[in-house]
Amino acid sequence: MPDIMTDDAEAIAKKLMRDAPKQPGRQPFRVDVSEGRGHQHVKVWYADRWIGQYGIQRSSKSKRHNYVAEQLHVSRKEAYDLAKCPLDVDGYIRILEEKREI
View: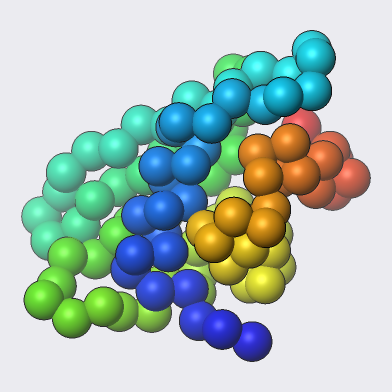
């Protein structure tokens, strides 16, 4: 199973901020990104419901961020797919609904 690396964690945050759900009746995610000391902090909400948060470490080298999956209530493969595009925003919402997170 591939690791979630720094660029993947950043791609997930950008995707959730940028992409609106295509299915009618679904709302876009709210993502707040703030700069911390040595980290970016990413906080995610859906329809005013807290989903989770994770930090992205700043470094000259890419680092593993496998904990992102757990923070967003998905498997590591699903988080990787969310970063690399096979899993879209609607698919992520569907996973959260199945797990009764939203």
